[in-house]
Structure formats: C-alpha cells, structure tokens
Amino acid sequence: MNEHDSEKMAGMLETMGYESTSNEKEADLIIYNTCLVRKNAELKVYGNLGHLKTLKKKKPDLIIAVCGCMTQKKEIRDLIKEKYSHVDIVFGTHNIHKLPELIANHKQNPGMVIDVWEEAGDIVEDVPVRRKFGFKAFVNVMHGCNNFCTYCIVPYTRGRERSRHPDNILKEIEQLAKQGCKEVTLLGQNVNSYGKTLENKITFAKLLRMVNEIDGIERIRFTTSHPKDLSDELIYTIRDCEKVCEHIHLPFQAGSNNILKKMNRKYTKEQYLELAEKIKKEIPGVAITTDIIVGFPGETEEDFKDTLDVVKKVRFDSAFTFIYSIRKGTPAAKMENQIPDDIKHKRFQKLLDTLYPISLEINKKLKDKEIKVLVEEVSKADDTKLTGRTRTNKVVHFKGDKSLVGNIVTVKITNPKTWTLEGVLVEEN
Ligand code: 5AD
Ligand code: SF4
Image (tube, rainbow, N blue to C red):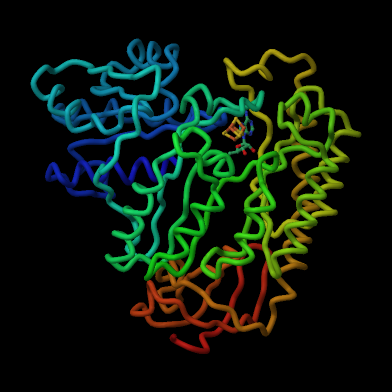
C-alpha cells in the first residue's frame, strides 16, 4: 500500500519536472513515506531524519518531507516539530494528492508546512503514477480498514473503509493494459469486503470477473484477504477465472482461539482450518501464504502451540512472520501480560524452524516441472540470470537474456529451495 502511494508521489513529482536519483546527495527533495505497523520501522525513520540534518546543513535548499502513517499521529508530528526542525513538509495518508501544492507553498513561505487530514476525504482519482515496472502494476480497489484488530495501528492511520467505484478501477486497468501491462495486483487492507461502502453494492468476486475480461491483462493478483470475509463466491471465482492467479494471502495471525478473540479477528482456529481446506480442495495447485504474529499479550505456551499446529496443518507455501510490537493507541498496548522479549524471540525462532522445512518440501514437489514465469528483472546478484514469478508468486531464477523481461516464459525447475526456485528456460513464449 505504501509502495503504491510512493509511486503516486513519484508520478506527481515527475509531472512537476523532478527526476529520480538513487544518490541522496544529489537530491533536491527527499520524502520519507513512513510505516507505523511495527516499532522498528518507526525507529528507522527517526534515525534517517537525524542523519539528514547534516545533509540539509550542507545544502540548505534541500526539501525534506515526511508523510505516511507516522505523521497521522499527533504526538509524532509534535516530535518532528520539536526534534527535527530541519524537516520542511509534513503531510499524511489522506492528502498525498496535495504534494505539488505543499511543495509550492513551502517554496513561497519557508518554514515547516504541516498539512495532515484527520479524516479521509473523497477518493481522489486520476493521480499520475510512476510505476516501477511497465508490465505489472498495483491498483487500489479500496482504502482504509474497519476491522480494528487490537494490535494494529492501520485503522487509526488509514481511516475507515472506502471502496473505489468499479468503473474507475476498470478504466485504470484498461489503460494499463493498453500500455502493455500484463499483471495487476488489486490492493486493499481487506479486499474481501470490497464494494460494501458503494451505493450500488458489488462483491470483490464480481470485480475480479470484470477485470478478468480485460484484454491484454494476463495475471490478476490481490492482497490482502481477511479470513472472516472470504466467501465461497470468491473461491469459485479464483478457480474459474483463468487470469486470476492460484495464490491466496490469508493472514491467520495466531492459532489459539483465546488469542484470536483478544485480537478481535472474528474467526476461530477451526474456521480458519476449514477455510484453508476448502481453498485447497477447490483451487488445484493453489499456494496459500499468511501473516503470523508471535508474542501477543497473554500468549501462553499452549496458545503458541496452536499457532504451530495451524502451520503444520495448513502447510503454507511461505509466511510473513512478526514479533508482536506494542503500538500506542491500540487496545492491545494496554493489555496485561505483555510477553518478555526473550520468550518472544524463542517462539519466533521455533515458528521459523517449523515453517521453513514445510516451504522446502512444498517447493521440492516442483522439481522437473515446467512452469510459466513472468520475467521481472535481471538478477541483482548475476546479470546473466533473470528473476521472475510463477502464478503462485514464487520467485524463480534462471539464465536468460534481458530482452525477455516483461514476457511470460516457460521455465523447467531444476533446483527448488526454501524461498526461491532455480530453473532453466525451455520456451520463450
Ligand atoms: N505487531 C506485530 N505485527 C503486526 N502486524 C500488524 N500490527 C502488528 C503489531 N503491532 C502484522 C500483521 C499484519 C501485517 C501487515 O503486520 O500480521 O497482517
Ligand atoms: Fe490491521 Fe486487522 Fe485491518 Fe489488517 S484487517 S489492516 S491487521 S486492523
């Protein structure tokens, strides 16, 4: 979500005449688009802002801006004002479209410009976007979240759930397809509740079916799904629409019913297991990936065993794993029995030790299989190799010419590993 917001900012800056540089010393403008989901991300921003003070001293015309989830919090804005007075522009998640105006204001009236909207306004359409790749693109289908999982800061920084009108989504994707885009990833905090806030209600499954009809688009992905809202209609749509990839990212967060309840996730371990079973049964070759948190307040050894049990039963292709991080302002931050760091780390390691062998076993079954891969880029480690992704979102490395970037080719898997697959190119189709 943040990455795509950054693409929008880059798009606006490009229309203003800015060019991108990877050398911070060369930059006339540096924007930090921040994340508040975990403490480490937050601390990194303070470190980076501190470091920019020296750069700003050497180059007083440099404009430094901070935006994203962190600046939605008043106490963080106050901290920036007090400790990082060399920051020029502070804006939030709801008004990124105002960036050009804020830069112009700052140029006219030097001094820190702060413009953060507490509430989301109407969804702003037609913001120019500078996408990293031409052949694949993120497309927002909705913004915000109404779920209020008790550990999560997102509903407080991204506001209430709002869906984009399907016509606007389809128009954007049609335009992308005309420009040569082959893969779209539909984005929302909880795509399964797409359409509920629209005047003419529509389900996410129906939207997928409409996107499936767009000529030129060959792969459709989406993220993220909430288990409580994933409907049978969606499962059948993924199964039936040939462009919708066989991959579902389905965060389960914790295995214990007691913890799930405290997290306000609104499903039980048994319901999650049943859902995962149904997905596997209905969608042949599907990959299921997930998010897991260890060390939520009050988590006992028994509770943690339930998390491991879900991992063993579902057998995820891969997982994003997180150590619970206290986020001020969320209900879980005030809960009793916060788990000591050493226990959190021990459980985290045990979780990884359970997840990784399963990923490897799943990937090993792909040995000698010929798989379609969308080539994404020349490998960073070896420029004779290419990197691409399978429909199931697995990363594949293989030898090939850089002219194949953006094409869908066939690769025979020769060496499956835990996180990536190695293979050889068999067909440049
Ligand atoms: N601590 C740890 N992980 C968190 N996540 C969200 N909030 C927290 C937190 N306070 C994780 C969840 C979510 C993912 C994007 O980040 O697993 O699905
Ligand atoms: Fe956060 Fe829960 Fe909303 Fe996901 S569904 S963004 S974890 S509150």
